Amino acid sequence: MKKILILLLLLLFSGCASKKELSNQTALFWHNKIYNDINYLNLDQADDSFTSLEIEHPNSKYIPIDMLILFNAHYKNSEYELAKFYIDEYEKRFANKYQKKWCEYIKIKMDFLSIHNPYTNQQKITNLIKKTNEILDKYPDSVYNYELNTIKSKLEATKIVFNNQIAKLYGKLDKQKAIQ
Image (cartoon, rainbow, N blue to C red; front, side, top):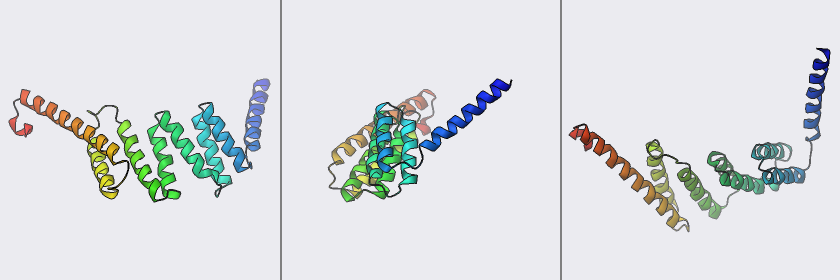
């Protein structure tokens, strides 16, 4: 029993010691750690390293770069909500007027890609069509409008197919008022 207790205490103190060693590092250290964590597909650790970078070096020149790196890593890993978080933060804090167009486009694209089953996400599809229209109106000269219009068309087609399926179901149930 004493051996187990001693072993647990050693593990506890060694765990605390390893965390202490990682505090008070340079911004470059955290930047490199984020990059290495991503290379080894350890995205949770990369997120933690980014948090440490922001806490220890809030004015670091690596923060915007690392936000984009983490956005891209989560995006490629189909973790759209986390990717959207990083791109949102980047847009709020660092994006110029040209980058804002790209940020808005990429957020729409991530929302579109995150729809796995359109039949269970009717409201999300409706909201995304509305949001896409707002972005198209806000940036009428954007280079991303072709792609945004394509996404919008696919969403509208999905909505039409879904509405037709609902109408057929109501037709089978002989509920003519519900069809319209």
